[in-house]
Length: 120
Image 1 (tube, rainbow, N blue to C red):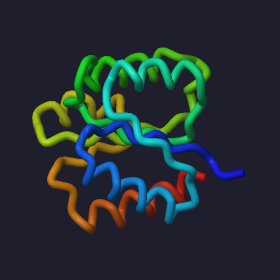
Image 2: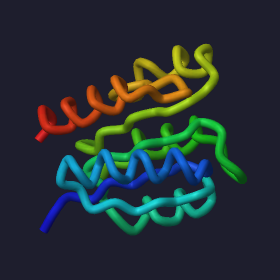
Image 3: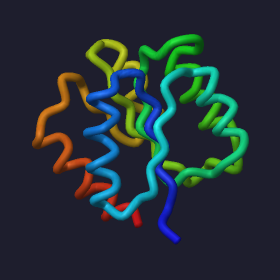
Image 4: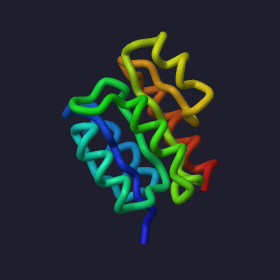
């Protein structure tokens, strides 16, 4: 059984790109489009990886990130933050495992996939 990767992203194109990259890295993927749904799902599962958009509907990504980090069940979950706001990216750099600034480039996706293999 492959490990679970949650893609918390409201942009359909980006969630598709992340899904392809994570699937290629051997993960089972699940897309979540808003913070409220993400909050509920994270209570139910222990993903290996979460890609987390900072600007999602209902509950912002930084609150979801704090909740992930506060949950002992998720101590080994790797969080990849995605944001178009470079300043926001800097504020979470110490909490996230990786920060990707949008627009996401092919090089960033390649590096993400490489890092995911190293985390295993």
